[in-house]
Length: 160
Length: 275
Ligand code: FES
Ligand code: FES
Image (tube, rainbow over all chains, first blue to last red; front, top):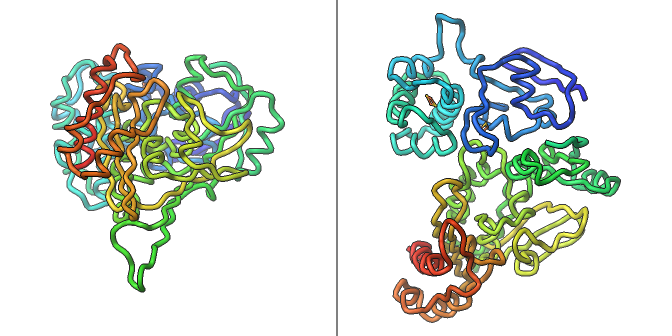
């Protein structure tokens, strides 16, 4: 079946089989390999993208279900190679990654939680950050620097 | 994942018609259980009917109950939640949080943020996982499950592990219940899956009836706990919970915990649900 959606602001359309996962559509068909697959049990969060502005595990959604929706992947955050998104800068400056495998998912989960908290006018405390990282697993960092990065990125994310 | 044919339905009627045409069709709600199960090849429906765009099946409605001319503040409102309402929508509904905060809190603790953005109450209720949260809530709140063809009382609906009263091709459209005067949910989440190892939902209706439902513990899914109900009806206190004997008979034993451990957790979670 032909599936069309908007990815990082661009209209795309691909002929895929009905059982194609959104993450396969993104990685294999669009060749946007920033979104990762770290498990097959929906637990790791390496595959998190935004679907219509909401953090979603792209390994746990069919591409067909995203027909017509707006998807943002980690590639869609930076304006250019030299003009990174504040959350990306924060991860870089706070040593929020080691091997970097979990990072795309961490960053998409982070920008989602910051946007939600900003919209609701709530303060994103360290505890809240940890709670919202429930669905993202990192095998390297021990999380402390990820939490630090998100707090730093949140303070720099002015636009919601 | 095995091959499947994808269909989209914008109403429950359309979905029912599509299911009727298939030998082996399944509803795709939020997919947060079904897609992982299909990826593991534990489910292989020939046809999938996606309800994610069925707007009429989405949203929370609250009907206030008037008592002697004034709005009653402590429970009694009728709450209807559309089957395709996501956990995030239930958790984030500010009106619902005012009249039934226990449901908002329960929804806010299902899975993780990404799962809550897609997972739905209808999907959870249709699946009836023995460790899911919503079945305990609906059982204790004596909710009604609305389908495309009838209304089913929660106690008739939940029929054991993954078993429900749903007939083939019957589709949940909404759940409804009366906001309790007092309600609480104590959950001990499995540290890895976040499913309840034991979850105890306690509700006292506006008429004073006490109902206690336990999830995650019973070896035949969600059930009502007569001992706790009797104790709390007589004396609404943690001391009353402490005084009763919770038997390990009929409780699950698995690698996460023995039946005796779960029996003890039932008491501990009941106490947490009360405070
Ligand atoms: S790849 Fe999606 S949660 Fe692990
Ligand atoms: S940095 Fe290696 S998995 Fe997180």
